Image (cartoon, rainbow, N blue to C red; front, side, top):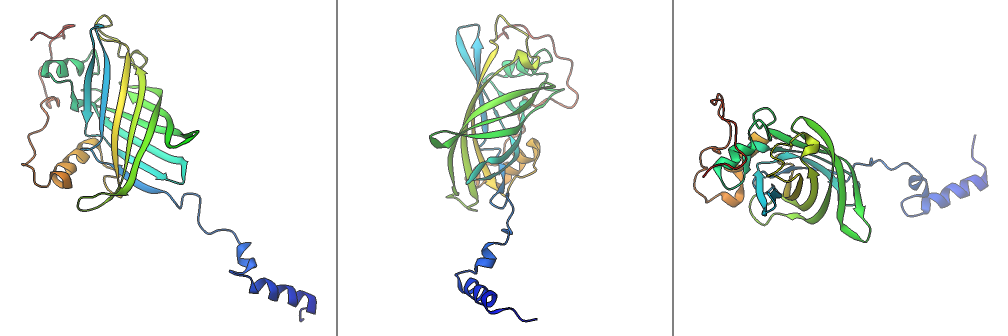
Length: 258
């Protein structure tokens, strides 16, 4: 049965519109995550700095390198971003070998039993008035305890890296605080403060390091990182990393002797 004349005229007019009005009414084929891409954390250029009171005299400063994990985000929709990162606590560095070992001892971080910390995001909220800043909240797994942690994050850049192999790279700076006692790390209260300040500098590389563990990521970076292409061969593994079968450590004193 042929269409009547008025209906035929309407269909002809719709088809003549740019792109076709009927096509505009069809559902968009792309899904909500179409703009997202996967990035892995560069273990050399991602570093966690922490500071806490040393008996009220100063803020003792330490760092942890070799982080690994993944980040999925769309710069046009930060609320959909997802972060999962692991930090190898056995790469902790306080500037003194005795203090490194004391911090990793059983009555503090207990690095042999809990060698990594992990943060998984649950919510990302842009800061009003500043499109480059965000509040990232999630769960921190530390010392066998899962607890909430929020970070204030600044988005620094997303661009092609200037050195070969020119991977697309995102850079971030973050700060936050946590209570060590909230994670069951409460020894030496008269010497070590409870509040821990965090500062994190991170670089995430598109389609690289994704899915790496902290150990494998650090090893890959030692051999592949373009910034170190002309450097000397990698040094031996960190001396603070526990041996497979170390002797039972002596109970650390509140102030390691020099």
